[in-house]
Length: 202
Image (cartoon, rainbow, N blue to C red; front, top):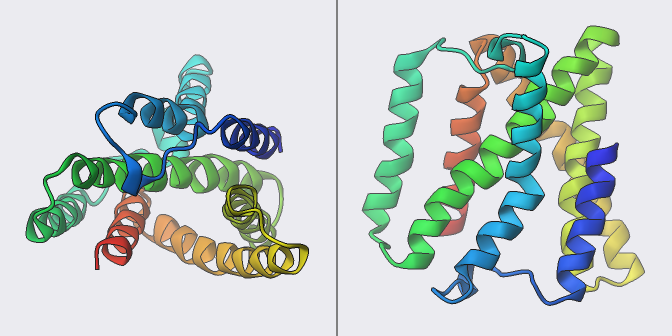
């Protein structure tokens, strides 16, 4: 898709110009570059999707943004920020991680790949194919970014692609199931954020 090509060349450009800032390397002097990187790679696409939805005069519920299960959403938010406070890392890096895994990773990925892509595919093709295609694309995105950044060999690149494609299909399917059952994209967003945040912090 256009999004995949865009992210690929953006990542390549940022890497070649030494503009990729890793989370552990964030400082006051480079945080503006990190914010710009994350905006261009994820949040910019989210804004486009939200804008298209509103321009078409469609409800945000068409991409999963609903008030369903608001109590569960509140509980999951409390868990997420509870993890942050329990960890107690209130440094610049710690605060940015809290923002990054909730907004840049989970919110952006779930909206793009489940709320928008899966929903659009599900209207046109059988659900299992929509799950498969959206999962493959999600996995592919996770594969080529580390390949570019870490200069993987051919064999390691193939291994990374196979692993990420499999993970994209499996975990994408799980998040879609949660999305369909809860009728709210916010639930898989929060579960995704919590799992990623726990994995990184602990």
